Image (cartoon, rainbow, N blue to C red; front, top):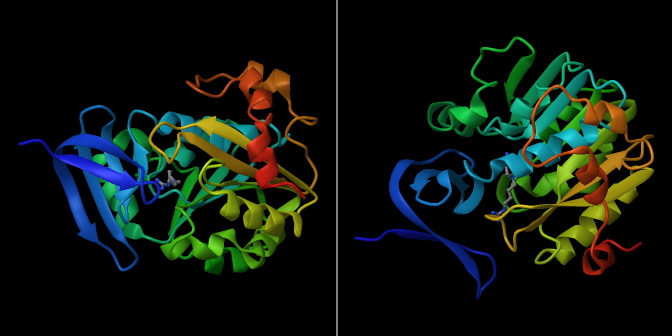
Length: 281
Ligand code: AG3
Protein backbone atom coordinates (compact mmCIF):
# COMPACT_ATOMS: atom_id res chain seq x y z
CA UNK A 1 0.00 0.00 0.00
CA UNK A 2 1.27 3.51 -0.85
CA UNK A 3 1.03 6.22 1.80
CA UNK A 4 1.21 9.87 0.74
CA UNK A 5 0.93 13.01 2.85
CA UNK A 6 -0.32 16.31 1.42
CA UNK A 7 0.06 19.76 2.98
CA UNK A 8 -2.35 22.06 1.20
CA UNK A 9 -0.74 25.39 0.28
CA UNK A 10 -3.99 26.92 -0.97
CA UNK A 11 -7.45 25.53 -1.64
CA UNK A 12 -6.20 24.13 -4.93
CA UNK A 13 -2.49 23.37 -4.55
CA UNK A 14 -0.35 21.35 -2.16
CA UNK A 15 2.87 19.40 -1.70
CA UNK A 16 2.60 15.60 -1.55
CA UNK A 17 5.25 13.23 -0.24
CA UNK A 18 5.44 9.48 -0.09
CA UNK A 19 5.88 8.32 3.49
CA UNK A 20 7.07 4.96 4.75
CA UNK A 21 6.14 5.21 8.41
CA UNK A 22 4.90 7.38 11.23
CA UNK A 23 7.52 7.69 13.97
CA UNK A 24 5.46 9.80 16.38
CA UNK A 25 1.97 11.22 16.43
CA UNK A 26 0.54 13.04 19.43
CA UNK A 27 -1.18 16.14 20.71
CA UNK A 28 0.28 18.62 23.18
CA UNK A 29 -1.75 21.31 24.92
CA UNK A 30 -0.83 23.60 22.00
CA UNK A 31 -0.84 21.58 18.78
CA UNK A 32 -0.75 18.30 16.91
CA UNK A 33 2.82 16.99 16.40
CA UNK A 34 3.70 14.34 13.81
CA UNK A 35 7.09 12.98 12.80
CA UNK A 36 7.13 10.75 9.72
CA UNK A 37 9.72 9.09 7.51
CA UNK A 38 9.56 10.23 3.88
CA UNK A 39 11.33 8.61 0.94
CA UNK A 40 12.61 11.80 -0.68
CA UNK A 41 13.26 14.18 2.23
CA UNK A 42 14.18 11.91 5.17
CA UNK A 43 12.42 12.47 8.49
CA UNK A 44 9.85 15.26 8.49
CA UNK A 45 8.22 17.09 11.40
CA UNK A 46 4.72 18.56 11.06
CA UNK A 47 2.82 20.86 13.43
CA UNK A 48 -0.94 20.94 12.93
CA UNK A 49 -0.34 19.26 9.57
CA UNK A 50 2.13 21.90 8.30
CA UNK A 51 5.69 20.95 7.30
CA UNK A 52 8.14 22.47 9.78
CA UNK A 53 11.37 20.71 8.87
CA UNK A 54 12.70 17.84 6.79
CA UNK A 55 16.16 16.37 7.20
CA UNK A 56 17.00 17.05 3.56
CA UNK A 57 16.25 20.76 3.25
CA UNK A 58 16.40 22.12 6.83
CA UNK A 59 19.95 23.35 6.21
CA UNK A 60 18.63 26.15 4.00
CA UNK A 61 16.21 27.53 6.60
CA UNK A 62 18.60 27.19 9.54
CA UNK A 63 21.59 28.70 7.71
CA UNK A 64 19.47 31.62 6.62
CA UNK A 65 17.64 32.42 9.85
CA UNK A 66 20.97 32.56 11.73
CA UNK A 67 24.09 33.54 9.75
CA UNK A 68 22.97 36.82 8.10
CA UNK A 69 22.30 38.41 11.53
CA UNK A 70 25.32 36.82 13.20
CA UNK A 71 27.69 38.04 10.46
CA UNK A 72 26.17 41.53 10.45
CA UNK A 73 26.39 42.10 14.21
CA UNK A 74 30.07 42.83 15.08
CA UNK A 75 30.00 40.94 18.40
CA UNK A 76 27.00 38.64 18.90
CA UNK A 77 27.51 37.34 22.44
CA UNK A 78 24.01 36.66 23.68
CA UNK A 79 21.35 35.25 21.36
CA UNK A 80 17.70 34.35 21.95
CA UNK A 81 15.63 32.01 19.77
CA UNK A 82 11.86 32.17 20.17
CA UNK A 83 10.24 28.96 18.90
CA UNK A 84 12.67 26.69 17.07
CA UNK A 85 12.11 23.69 19.35
CA UNK A 86 13.68 21.35 16.78
CA UNK A 87 17.07 22.87 17.66
CA UNK A 88 18.27 23.57 14.09
CA UNK A 89 18.75 27.30 14.71
CA UNK A 90 20.65 26.69 17.95
CA UNK A 91 22.94 24.23 16.13
CA UNK A 92 23.93 26.94 13.62
CA UNK A 93 24.30 29.65 16.30
CA UNK A 94 26.72 27.39 18.19
CA UNK A 95 29.08 27.45 15.18
CA UNK A 96 29.86 31.10 16.03
CA UNK A 97 32.65 31.17 18.62
CA UNK A 98 31.74 34.75 19.73
CA UNK A 99 28.39 33.52 21.06
CA UNK A 100 28.69 33.01 24.81
CA UNK A 101 25.09 32.06 25.46
CA UNK A 102 22.11 31.03 23.33
CA UNK A 103 18.68 30.78 24.97
CA UNK A 104 15.90 28.74 23.36
CA UNK A 105 12.39 29.77 24.41
CA UNK A 106 9.92 27.25 22.97
CA UNK A 107 6.29 27.17 24.08
CA UNK A 108 5.84 23.43 23.51
CA UNK A 109 8.07 21.05 25.48
CA UNK A 110 6.81 18.11 23.42
CA UNK A 111 8.48 19.56 20.29
CA UNK A 112 11.84 19.72 22.11
CA UNK A 113 11.53 16.21 23.57
CA UNK A 114 10.51 14.53 20.33
CA UNK A 115 13.14 16.42 18.30
CA UNK A 116 15.84 15.14 20.68
CA UNK A 117 14.42 11.64 20.27
CA UNK A 118 13.84 11.55 16.49
CA UNK A 119 15.78 14.44 14.91
CA UNK A 120 19.23 14.32 16.54
CA UNK A 121 20.94 15.95 13.55
CA UNK A 122 19.01 19.12 14.40
CA UNK A 123 18.63 18.77 18.17
CA UNK A 124 22.31 17.95 18.81
CA UNK A 125 22.94 21.16 20.80
CA UNK A 126 19.69 21.23 22.83
CA UNK A 127 20.07 17.83 24.48
CA UNK A 128 21.75 19.25 27.57
CA UNK A 129 25.30 18.56 26.37
CA UNK A 130 26.28 22.18 25.66
CA UNK A 131 26.77 24.60 28.58
CA UNK A 132 26.45 27.59 26.17
CA UNK A 133 22.79 26.66 25.56
CA UNK A 134 19.87 27.25 27.95
CA UNK A 135 16.33 25.97 27.38
CA UNK A 136 13.11 27.60 28.58
CA UNK A 137 9.75 26.01 27.94
CA UNK A 138 7.65 29.14 27.98
CA UNK A 139 5.54 31.49 25.89
CA UNK A 140 7.90 33.78 23.96
CA UNK A 141 5.81 36.83 24.86
CA UNK A 142 5.94 36.09 28.58
CA UNK A 143 9.68 35.39 28.45
CA UNK A 144 10.57 38.51 26.54
CA UNK A 145 8.45 40.76 28.75
CA UNK A 146 10.72 39.80 31.66
CA UNK A 147 13.99 40.55 29.79
CA UNK A 148 15.21 44.01 28.84
CA UNK A 149 18.34 45.33 27.14
CA UNK A 150 19.85 41.87 27.24
CA UNK A 151 20.30 40.27 23.79
CA UNK A 152 22.50 41.10 20.78
CA UNK A 153 20.40 39.01 18.41
CA UNK A 154 16.84 37.64 18.70
CA UNK A 155 15.58 35.09 16.16
CA UNK A 156 11.88 34.36 15.80
CA UNK A 157 11.76 30.78 14.48
CA UNK A 158 7.99 30.41 14.46
CA UNK A 159 5.24 28.56 12.67
CA UNK A 160 2.77 30.30 10.34
CA UNK A 161 0.64 33.01 12.01
CA UNK A 162 -2.11 30.60 13.05
CA UNK A 163 -2.41 28.82 16.41
CA UNK A 164 0.22 29.56 19.08
CA UNK A 165 2.33 31.84 16.82
CA UNK A 166 -0.29 34.53 15.98
CA UNK A 167 1.07 37.00 18.57
CA UNK A 168 4.59 36.71 17.12
CA UNK A 169 3.58 38.74 14.05
CA UNK A 170 2.11 41.74 15.91
CA UNK A 171 3.44 45.20 16.69
CA UNK A 172 3.16 44.76 20.47
CA UNK A 173 5.45 41.75 20.28
CA UNK A 174 8.00 43.64 18.15
CA UNK A 175 8.04 46.39 20.80
CA UNK A 176 8.93 43.79 23.42
CA UNK A 177 11.66 42.37 21.15
CA UNK A 178 13.01 45.88 20.65
CA UNK A 179 13.16 46.39 24.42
CA UNK A 180 14.83 43.00 24.99
CA UNK A 181 17.60 43.86 22.51
CA UNK A 182 20.67 45.89 23.42
CA UNK A 183 21.06 49.31 21.78
CA UNK A 184 22.62 47.82 18.63
CA UNK A 185 20.57 44.61 18.57
CA UNK A 186 19.22 42.73 15.54
CA UNK A 187 16.05 40.66 15.15
CA UNK A 188 15.37 38.15 12.38
CA UNK A 189 11.99 36.45 11.94
CA UNK A 190 10.78 33.94 9.38
CA UNK A 191 8.35 35.91 7.20
CA UNK A 192 6.47 33.38 5.06
CA UNK A 193 6.27 33.03 1.28
CA UNK A 194 6.35 36.19 -0.85
CA UNK A 195 4.45 34.20 -3.48
CA UNK A 196 1.47 33.06 -1.36
CA UNK A 197 1.46 35.28 1.73
CA UNK A 198 1.47 38.87 0.45
CA UNK A 199 -1.12 40.02 3.02
CA UNK A 200 0.77 38.55 5.98
CA UNK A 201 3.98 40.15 4.75
CA UNK A 202 2.35 43.53 4.27
CA UNK A 203 1.10 43.72 7.84
CA UNK A 204 4.19 42.10 9.35
CA UNK A 205 6.60 44.54 7.69
CA UNK A 206 4.48 47.57 8.50
CA UNK A 207 4.37 46.41 12.15
CA UNK A 208 8.16 46.05 12.12
CA UNK A 209 8.69 49.47 10.54
CA UNK A 210 6.61 51.05 13.31
CA UNK A 211 9.25 49.81 15.77
CA UNK A 212 12.67 49.42 14.08
CA UNK A 213 14.65 51.98 12.01
CA UNK A 214 16.18 49.33 9.72
CA UNK A 215 13.80 46.75 8.19
CA UNK A 216 14.73 44.58 5.19
CA UNK A 217 13.42 41.36 3.66
CA UNK A 218 15.62 38.57 2.30
CA UNK A 219 14.83 35.31 0.56
CA UNK A 220 15.84 31.67 0.46
CA UNK A 221 14.85 28.61 -1.56
CA UNK A 222 13.16 26.00 0.66
CA UNK A 223 11.66 23.23 -1.49
CA UNK A 224 9.20 21.81 1.09
CA UNK A 225 7.61 25.15 2.09
CA UNK A 226 4.70 26.72 0.16
CA UNK A 227 5.92 27.79 -3.32
CA UNK A 228 9.56 26.99 -2.42
CA UNK A 229 10.32 30.71 -2.17
CA UNK A 230 10.60 31.67 1.50
CA UNK A 231 11.58 34.88 3.26
CA UNK A 232 12.96 36.38 6.44
CA UNK A 233 12.54 39.81 8.02
CA UNK A 234 15.72 41.55 9.20
CA UNK A 235 14.92 44.29 11.72
CA UNK A 236 17.65 46.21 13.45
CA UNK A 237 18.32 49.16 15.74
CA UNK A 238 21.57 50.16 14.05
CA UNK A 239 23.32 47.79 11.64
CA UNK A 240 22.25 47.40 8.02
CA UNK A 241 22.60 43.82 6.67
CA UNK A 242 24.25 44.92 3.40
CA UNK A 243 26.04 48.17 4.29
CA UNK A 244 27.41 46.93 7.61
CA UNK A 245 28.05 43.33 6.53
CA UNK A 246 31.40 42.00 7.75
CA UNK A 247 32.30 40.23 4.53
CA UNK A 248 35.77 39.27 5.65
CA UNK A 249 34.56 37.60 8.84
CA UNK A 250 31.95 35.67 6.82
CA UNK A 251 34.51 34.60 4.20
CA UNK A 252 36.98 33.44 6.81
CA UNK A 253 34.40 31.60 8.90
CA UNK A 254 35.91 28.53 10.45
CA UNK A 255 32.91 26.29 9.76
CA UNK A 256 31.06 24.89 6.77
CA UNK A 257 27.64 25.92 5.51
CA UNK A 258 25.77 24.27 2.63
CA UNK A 259 23.58 27.24 1.67
CA UNK A 260 24.89 30.44 3.24
CA UNK A 261 28.07 32.08 1.92
CA UNK A 262 29.44 35.62 1.72
CA UNK A 263 28.06 36.24 -1.80
CA UNK A 264 24.63 34.86 -1.00
CA UNK A 265 24.47 37.06 2.12
CA UNK A 266 24.28 40.03 -0.24
CA UNK A 267 22.31 38.34 -3.01
CA UNK A 268 19.54 37.21 -0.66
CA UNK A 269 18.56 40.84 -0.01
CA UNK A 270 18.00 41.51 -3.74
CA UNK A 271 14.28 40.88 -4.22
CA UNK A 272 12.10 40.12 -7.22
CA UNK A 273 9.71 42.98 -7.95
CA UNK A 274 6.54 41.23 -6.74
CA UNK A 275 8.19 40.49 -3.38
CA UNK A 276 9.42 44.07 -3.04
CA UNK A 277 5.88 45.25 -3.85
CA UNK A 278 4.42 43.11 -1.02
CA UNK A 279 6.24 45.22 1.54
CA UNK A 280 6.33 48.61 -0.24
CA UNK A 281 5.90 51.52 2.17
N1 AG3 B 1 9.34 27.32 10.96
C1 AG3 B 1 8.74 27.86 9.75
C2 AG3 B 1 7.69 26.96 9.21
C3 AG3 B 1 6.72 27.58 8.30
C4 AG3 B 1 6.32 26.59 7.30
N2 AG3 B 1 4.99 26.77 6.84
C5 AG3 B 1 4.28 25.83 6.21
N3 AG3 B 1 4.78 24.66 5.95
N4 AG3 B 1 3.08 26.10 5.83
C6 AG3 B 1 10.10 26.15 10.87
C7 AG3 B 1 10.81 25.81 12.12
C8 AG3 B 1 12.18 25.32 11.84
N5 AG3 B 1 13.06 25.45 12.94
